[in-house]
Length: 105
Image 1 (cartoon, rainbow, N blue to C red):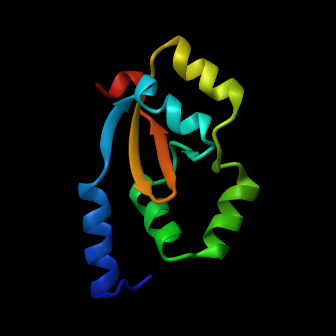
Image 2: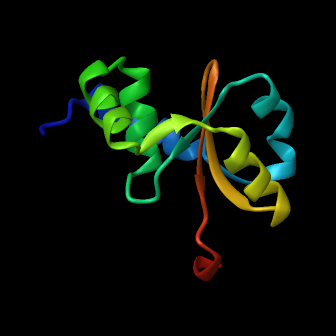
């Protein structure tokens, strides 16, 4: 895919807005239903970019594959139990999160 200058700038902006957070810092957002889990095999910034661009085809593919989904109670409990660290980026009103593998620290 050839990326336009605008997309490259948006990607750079989103990349700069990512942050590492403990799950406890995201719990209130989870309670509001705005936390979206992104599978570890996907690029969090690419998913954020596609969401910003309203790329329905990409999201339908990821949703069907279970690679992007609204965080559920079971996942939230697992994250809370181990106070998981997550990469996060806001694409209002959503907060996209991706767990940081324990061996990547």
